[in-house]
Image (cartoon, helix red, strand yellow):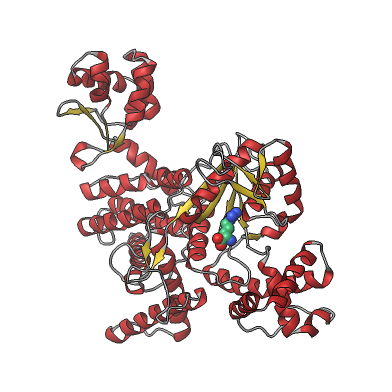
Length: 611
Ligand code: ARG
């Protein structure tokens, strides 16, 4: 429709390119704010009237006549209406709505006739990315949940998605960790075939704290730790072995969280992977005269320098310290080069907290200047806000420690299970629910709740972590959505069973070919609203891929289940006499069910059979 509007303005109304640009930037078409205004509305007449020296209403009339004169438009829209000072209101024609919906319904691949994207892009998504020997914290949880949802959406649209876990597995902290390991468990390093399981470290984070304490207090230990870094960098076998053991311990812990969350296809490519390339990165920056010495360090200044050598604007990007050590930024520059030139990515997304925005914008700028990135590859930081406790402060346990992710997820599951048991007790007519099955359901609900609470918020805002809110059955929550799906499924099953019964009563020939296409009919306003909403789903998915905001998908699904309720209140499905109407309404239930299923799956949320 946008294209048709543009052509109409350009060809039929001879609007200048200049004026067109301003109309486009004002937005050619928006969703209608109220149902009585139709489905979409356009303000072009108001925007362009002055430029064309006509009255907005006259222009609106000429514009809508010309637009509706186009056969392609007539197929999609009901006659166009003009309102107020010159608003143009569009209403999708019922025949078009029914046709499109029936295309969605008939898609046997289960993807609701949503086309795959063209061109197909190669998209690298850098997400999760916790640090070895440190706690995987709620920030990493957000990155994991949001990154996974975006990966699923892009993958669904047919893009070639590479999921990379940029684990912090390299750097000076390993000096003290290795020294500490050598001190407390010297035998392990010498032992043939030693692995993570040979090491008696129950809590790597406590181990890290212990090492840090010694590093700060004991000079000899500090000295040895510095040497360890050099040894590790130069590939000393014993140091490498110790490093590998430490990484494995963390890896196991991260793996448990990924397993619980159902994260799949995430490839570990940590900072250490880029270590061999760092020297060349620094050399290239020097050769291109991009980096300069500043207090012994090699830096890239993005803004002019003051007389005293400091930056007049943003701080410089340090790529090598005076002691020769490389930086977080150096690794990111090497990673960009690798992703753009070796991985041949068209898009690289970094799902990392908002606090790193200036890091990424500077690093992207350096990468472009140095040719590590090219015009073809789009680098995007996908920032997100903080997770806060219910008190609005930083998320902590009651004793003030950081919350372990495994504990946090387990608690959500425990509370979900408690709730299910409660309900079971209250409802005397409920069928008995075997423990094993109930626990399985609680696991899905608990994890879904944590994910959905995160995804349903605009990712850029901070959000308050509240078990009671996320587990509530009312409002825009996972339990509400899961319940909506269970209910629709039940209605759909009953309607189908009823139809079979009717057919049997009529003694129809069982072997007679059943028609595969259901003719859809529109019988009421609530039905019409539901249908129109269902048709928006493909655009919503595309919108998430473009804007990288998963909450738009949550909003769409939430609204969908509300519209379904309104439909179901006024339009009986199971017991409606007219077979054609029953078939049509059953089909609408099927499409709604499928949209919810696909939508939740794209959010990384599993279904439940009962709730
Ligand atoms: N490990 C980092 C952290 O915990 C996140 C890494 C993000 N990815 C990147 N390419 N810098 O803050």
